[in-house]
Length: 407
Image (cartoon, rainbow, N blue to C red; front, side, top):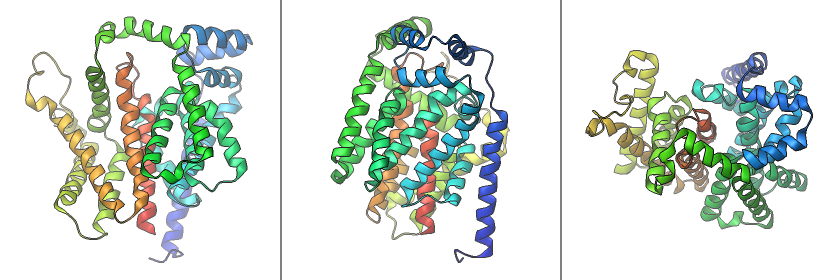
């Protein structure tokens, strides 16, 4: 179908209209909650004692100095976060589309927004439709993706590079975003040494140093101690393997127990694209079949909620009676196989298109962003908001493949 056909124009208009409607929906449905974190930070804003509050937070609870500073100085201004939330989403969509193509147009950005909107409601409620969640998740993640897009382009103007260097200090003080940024840069350096420049090295050092300052702050140490005793007293006795297992359980919950539309979309698009290119090896054929089967079964669950009960994607909680039954661990086997299949397909595509190292890095970073939560005693009470970066990455990878299909 010609790119300038009437059908394509209407598709583009529809995508832009849907994305615009979603952004308006966000603005009309976000408000401060009168309890927990929103109320806590609003009281700090109203007190006007910003320096003493930040000092107390740094010493007793959190090392997120810059994130907290922005929050307590602006949370009382409704206009800031009312427009800041959709603006952050637009920045995120722009950055993701820029990493998939040399330029970011309205149509791919709109498609990203629609995929973003389809992420599990449990994730989006506490990262977008929650004001404190905006400051702690959406905004730092959007900024991190923007800075990474500037790093990845390698051709951006000096102004963009200077802005990125300044923003690098900010993203360092959201632990999950900073860790993912550092891992992504390290993996990119490993895949392509050409990305190792003075600018990228400076970015890496800034984020690394400030990330260490954040996690080693007196407040972070104190919080780890208190959360361990309050949430998971036996946590301090866990070895690395057990903590990794907790993180694996977290990613298993997200991929297998929840109908994950962005991931389903990526599985289908990636499989379709590989089918259109060259011959298929046995391993790639199996990977495609398994990935599509996962997507189809999850869509069946979406259309038939009754299958959520005692289905092999959702076998219920582990108890003393079911701990030693093999079927209980079927979802973990399926999780491992799915991730292996997706990586297999993308590694095969690298032989045809070297740029596929980007979604490989993205998938690895996404998985790490969730599994690393196993090293926190709050792994089971953090909810789904800590899966936000993984969901954004799934939407990004889908846009990446769409761009390849349409070329």
